[in-house]
Each structure stands twice: as structure tokens, then as C-alpha cells.
Amino acid sequence: MNLADYNQFTQELRLKLAGDDRVLALIALGSMAQQDYQPDEWSDHDFFVVTIQGVQEDMRRDLSWLPHADEIIFHFRETEHGLKVLYRGGHLLEFAVFNEDELQVARLNRYRVLLDKKDLSPKLAELALSTQDYVVHARTEPDKRFAEFLMNIFVGVGRQARGEQLSGRRFIKTHALTHLLHLLAELIPAEAEHLLDNLDPFRRFEQVYPILGAELNRILAQNTLFTAEDLLSVAVRELRPYLTNFPEAAVSEVQQLIAKAKQQEQPI
Image 1 (cartoon, rainbow, N blue to C red):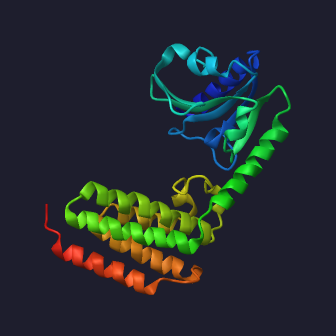
Image 2: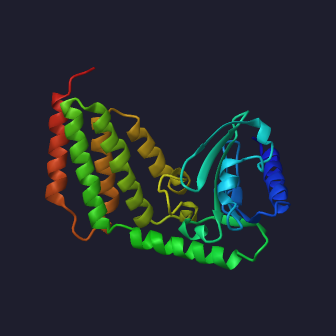
Image 3: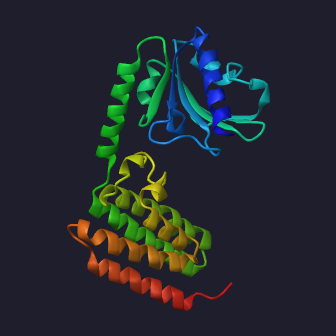
């Protein structure tokens, strides 16, 4: 979907909900909010709809309020409040429908209010602040997160060496990588760090850290054991200055395990 069509869909959605007496507000999220970055041809529509009491479940079940509802080819309920909807032609909507009370369970970072019939803006601003507080309080101490990263590498290498390749790949290329990205995003300064998503360290990482992002993508394209070795090297190089109790002995032990597993691995 090009930008003109994208914006047209947004406007049609806003106008439909503006005329719907059940609806109190429409909040655009992510690229739909058009705050720090614009939507592109790969962007979906992310949004919250806030309703009066008692109608929210009806709107989750009956999607006729969406623009071009006759072109929907697939949809499913993803969470208690949220849905994914796929249109013919490949455009995706990801949204949640809340009544005013239910809104308090949502997490909100980048957003833009497109429709507000009940002056919910102060409540939304408060929700965004509470999300920031949640992220700060949920943040794992760097030394503990590095320990989690290190042990994910250790377990993944063992699984890979045992022949459990799917499990080994998951520990190294998913679990360990997630901890590493959290650490890099939280500790490494960057001019464009405002583009990072505080709820998902994978989002726009390459835009904020282009050199490091390119290096990590090259690493992830390798055999799993080589990935483990190189992810550990990146972690040691980038994070050692920021950790108060760098676990030298444990890092050395994991490096030795990787070397042993690489020696024993048989070509497939």
C-alpha cells in the first residue's frame, strides 16, 4: 500500500468511527501515528478504538465498522482485546478495542489521537507515562541480563552439539539475541536512539545502530555455533565497559564449550 492509499484508509477509518455513536476515541499507534517515522509500503495499520461501556465485545466480533469490510479475507482474535485482520491485496490491521475502563491494561508509547469525543487525551498521556514506568521497572539489571545471555549461549551450544538443532538455534538466535539487543539498546549511546521501541528491542535497531545492525545480521546468517561464537564476541567487545562485575571466568568457559562443539560438529 503506497502512502496516499495508506493515508486514505486512515481517513476513512476515522470518518467511519466519528459517525459511530459507540466510539469515544481512535488512537493511531506505531507508523500509523506518523511521529518519528512515516509509514511505508510494508506498514500495517495499528490502532486502539475506545468505546462506551457494553459494546466493545460486539465491535470485536462484528467487523462491519471497518472500511471496506467486504474485502477482509482473514481475521482472528489475538488477545482478549486485540485482533489481526487481513485484507485482499495483503494489507494488515492490528488493533484492540477497549472500553474506557479496559484501556488501563494497554501499553502505549508512540501514538497520535485521531478522534477524541470525550477528552481522553489526559488519560492517554498518563497511560504513556505509566508505560515508560513499566519499562523502567521491568528492565533487568545489566549484569543479570548479561548472565542470562551467557547462559542462553551455553545451553544453546549444548543442544546444538547434541543434535537438537532447532532447540539450539532457538536459544542462540532468539533467546540470547533478545537479551543482547536489550543490553545494546539500553547501554550503547546513539544519536537516533529516540527511534528505538522501548517495548521491542528488535524494532528499528538497524536504523539506530546501522554498523552494529549489519554486523549482527551477518552473524545470524551463519551456522548456529559460529553465530554463538560471534554473538559472544560482540557482547564482550561492546558491553564489557558497562558491566560492573564482568564474568571473565564464565565467558572463558562458554568460549571453550563453543570451541569443543565446533570441533565435534559433523557436516550435514
